[in-house]
Length: 290
Image (cartoon, rainbow, N blue to C red; front, side):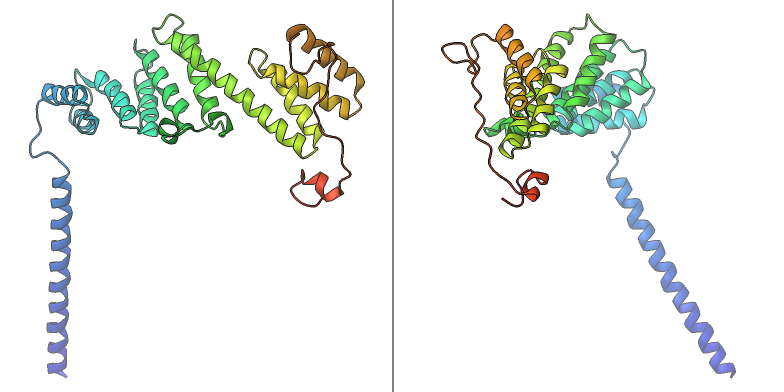
């Protein structure tokens, strides 16, 4: 009995030693791993900033981000803190980390609500959102941007609008205005594309609503002419005589040379003839059934 008890104690003691050794080994690995992610020594604040600027000037934005990160870690309230936050926005944007650039801009605006550089942060936040929807493919491939979902375009529009509201005389204001025009044109074109899709499915009510939406919400875009044509055509198809006449009248006043008018100045619908369709085809916009 005594021998068994001593054997158990020895065995338990051995297991505790093994467990203790494993814990110490794991702790040592964790500590060494953390140490490998940190510089061997903390450099002066100015050194980190100079290293970051030199890296950006050389186009090495990854190294710039690293040094700017050290600045934020070791000198969060130092003399270069605000500028480092601005540089981080730019470095991430140049590194094509658009989400990261937007996050850095948000952080800057939150930490520096009264900064004189708030216009830059708003501009870069809008620029990051503006390019998020386009992606890398559009830079190298012939991508039709009007066919892509708008996604972050509306957020970019809000950012640029806020910039113009708070900083109307900013050096970034002219470019922001042009990008807002581009966004509006893109959103309007997307609505027209959707309306044409509905017309192909003979979903004329849906197409009519899309066209009306463009006229009401994007009145100064190139898509208005097409929207008026669709509004007139679908209103005629739906036997809405007055809305059709009103749309044609607006089209004649604003676009007298529209392709919708023949040589005699009469409005000609380009819609295909109605086809008899099943109820299933109607409710599924032609996706199912004939």
